[in-house]
Length: 216
Image (cartoon, rainbow, N blue to C red; front, side, top):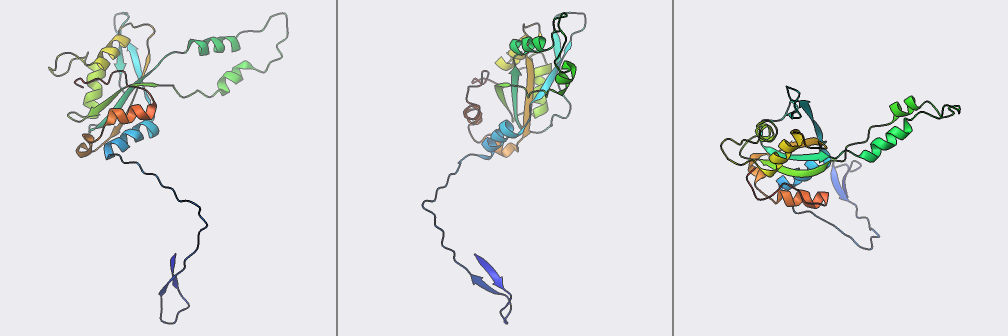
């Protein structure tokens, strides 16, 4: 440890102090990943899911359409699509808690309305199903093509598997799944480096359902 000794008459003289450490063993670890893989892990651990609203189509049909949020960057980067399945057991529990007591017995329990109001809404359990790389197009263009172009891709023919899934879910699939997205900006020079899908699959512990070797 080096520091300046102000007591020396000749001015600031550097002195060195060596301290003996009673360490038995020294360990270290490192992670050899690319910048894009690091951003992919940041997308998973630091970026929150954004729910995608669905509006009923005009005419009273069973179909609906997705309403993407504003503020999606017009830059390159990574984006993920996920879904949340409705939990029927949680709804049943909520019904049991909210049921009225036996009319023949006095209600000794605390006010259930306050109990329901004070309950914190749990964070959604979203399952990843797709990781997209906005390299040839911007994040905004890629997400709009998945959600709002009826699966048509600028003349690229057949829509991808994740787009078919979104269309099926929006057009009367039962039960309809709640859809979520998240995204992160990455400089274009770094996007092509690394095994991004493999990186995310290792981090989450399961395979991405719609990440096949196909055109985005």
